[in-house]
Image 1 (cartoon, rainbow, N blue to C red):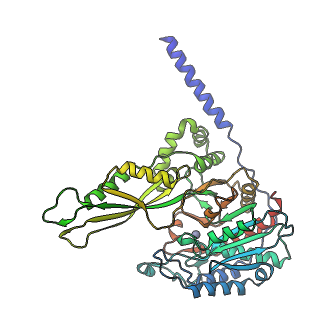
Image 2: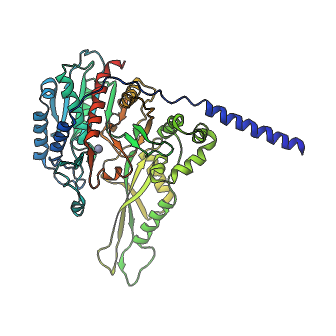
Image 3: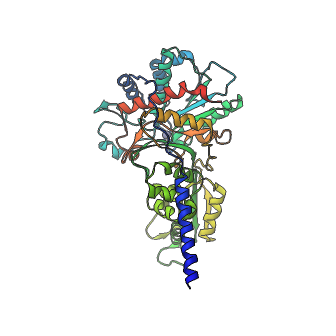
Length: 491
Ligand SMILES: [Zn+2]
């Protein structure tokens, strides 16, 4: 008996030592960035230009409603007026009717170019929400220290801050070390099939193998990352896949006074509730594991102990993360029933009932594996499962956080916060971005816009009162300025 206790004690001690040694082995946090040359941006003037950009209602409609091509053409003309140096130094091509591809030749044409992406289109504003806006969504009002309106977070800020940075660099007489391509899509909000996809194909067909591709998707998170106090830069290294499936139940129909057998509505309801009750499995791997590991150096000892020993603590960490919608979405493929339709009259049994369920697919799974699992879980011959016509994609490949491109992004972000130990974390982007079209061609695809988002700000994206602080726009411009100046350091 005594011997048993002794061996249990030794085992616990050994485990304890392993946990602590692994925790102590976590690398130190990055040194606070040294103060480097400040980037001066005339933020007031830049904010006025962003406001003007917002006034063009370049809306993409998911319904497939025709877009206002005059608004896009007006926006193009505005860019030419507002950024004359860019339009003189760079070659501009109109692609896919309304997207813009710029080529700014670098000093050394033999170096691999860099691609900076953004999109010009915005989502519509639902009529009933109009009254909730402090300033109308297409007013581009500059008031109370903010620029207000659609596109200030998603994604005219990206387009404008890139152009502001380049206009400023050109005014200083700077030529980039390597060629820079800008691709500004016109249909990102509806999948990017006619804008970004065609621009990527165009560049690939010209032999472009980018040293870095940067699009929207990550940001400066303010108190948003569980376990990290204060600010953290989250850089998207992959994005989830997208699949909408239509579930269709077929039944005999008939008069509601004499229902017979299973009804279409009953079978469909059962299928949906079965799916919801059996969510996709969670796992801590890929970008999410990378994020947790990158958080460890910045966490207090107890959290660090947990993060440094995921081999043992993964089940606990999973449960903690799964308790919030954001955390859960990082762990698994999400299941969201979004549309439902059946019946035309209260006393007629519908012969057909349909639902659309939207899945955001985590890296490691594919459209095919999702579809296979959905059919298996529903296991009902009355239910047919087919993809809808919406754009659908597999998850993107995961970009390389060990690459010089990632290091350049991380160092550029840190340089903006001299004296601060700013955590830079890799991140799995939940929504889709135009960057997905680079997936098959490059493992140096990253997603980040240097604007801070805090609690409540995320709801403004595609929501009410989308706005950006004037000083934060200056930060975004400063980020691109630094980044472009640092491009010579890439191999
Ligand atoms: Zn966007």
